[in-house]
Every structure is written in C-alpha cells, then in structure tokens.
Length: 310
View 1 (tube, rainbow, N blue to C red):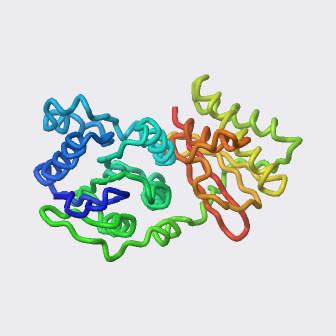
View 2: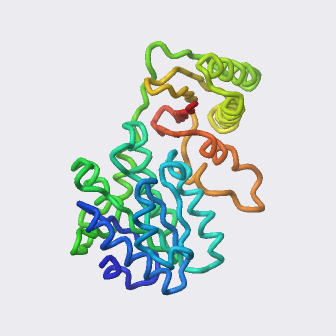
C-alpha cells in the first residue's frame, strides 16, 4: 500500500503508476479511507470519468471526502497550487491528504509542460507542511517520457503492489526542462507598448477576441488578463513590452506579453499574497480567468502566454 512510505506524518508526494482499474482502486481507495479514518482533510481531484467509481468504492465515507473534477479544477494547471493553498487554509491546521490525477491522455501538448512544472513546484510549495499527495499516472495510456517526468517530480513511486523511492527525483531539473522559449507564429499580431499605450493593447485584445467569437463574459476576462500582464511589464519588466495575439488551432485565443523582466519568485501567481502585502494579486487573477498560462524565463527577459477558450 502507498502508506508504507508515509511514516513521517509530514509532507509526502508520491506517484501511483497504475495499469488498470484494479490497480488504480487498490491503491487509491485505502489511501483515501486511511485519511478519513485518521480525521484528516481529504481531497480527491481526478478527471470526471474517474469520480463515480471512486465514490462507489468509498462507501459511506464519501461524505467526508471533498471531490473535484480535475478537468475543471485543473484545466489550467496554474490554478492547482492556489486551490491547494486554499484547501490547506480550509483545513484549519488539520493534516491534509490529496489523491489527484493532474496528467491524463487527453492533456494537450501545450498543457503538459505546465503540468510537469506544477508537480515540481508542489515539492517546493508544501515542503514541511503536514500534507500527503498521491498522484495517479495511467501507464497504459501515457508515454515513457511522462512516467520519467513523474519519477523526477515525486519522492516515491507506487507501482502496484510495490512502493519504492524514486532514484530519479529532481524537481528542479524537471521544472527547468520545460522552461523553454515559446515561439509565436509568423502571422501573430505584434504591438509594442509602454505605460501610455496599455489601454490601446487592452482594446486591441478585446476586439480581436470578439472577432474570434468569444462571448461578453470572456471579453472581460481578456481585458483583465491582458491588462495585468501589461501592468507587470511596465512595473517589473523594464517599463515596456511587446504584446502578441493570434488564434490557436484548437480555437483558443492566445495572448502573449514579452518584456525584460526576471522571474524572481516561481510562486508568483500561484500563492495568495500575505494579508499585509500590497499588490501581488494580478498574476493570481490571470491564472484564475485563463484556460492555460505558460511562461519562459530566459536570459533576455520573461515571456508570459495565456490561452482563453470560448
């Protein structure tokens, strides 16, 4: 059982490599029920089609489990850490136990790097917390490179019926492996900006989104996300930047802001600022309204790309 590596009662981040429903339930259900029995704050976040079998397997204990559809909760992997920070706050000091499945075969090529970086940052964000995570990976549907990334971002591997330490554990290297340039298409609309032209950028962004068929509620999200990114460039990125926009093949509208800034805190946009802190909410809001956020921190500066769907 996955509990074999959980003797400390502190932070634990394990990967479950499952091959079929039997091995999935054989580890997931005892992991969750053990948390319920010990009075922990228990969360299950898996793709929607996995929820019903788990609910049935939990029996009466399901009433003490907080269930989430990962395809909604984690559609943008950048939302996961903020949600987990809120979960720990809601637990009011109780130990937290999370069974999740952040990567599945339906993840897009654009989403996957953000998933790996999330899994890597989870180790930095919650080290020292009384929290246990078991993250499921479908060996029958995911490629060997995905499983290799899981080995790099998890301290131990649950490979039914055995559990072993991960000899490849290196979350820092895993994070940097996906910190790569984000080339824009040749037909992207480019618009340099500074503090005086930020309003023009927001107007261009919303007009482009409207032409691509985004509804009024999404246009407000566009204005918020683009406005916050441009404001960050002006404040932290050298006073100016370059805005780009285009339509993705899947129908998403993509916005990108590049500037001369430096990413000094990987938790920016993922951890709520302290109550006494001024500012710090901008990137958090960008993650909340966007369907995906990618970033590249390079020697020339910072590029942030957001995707918004209909």
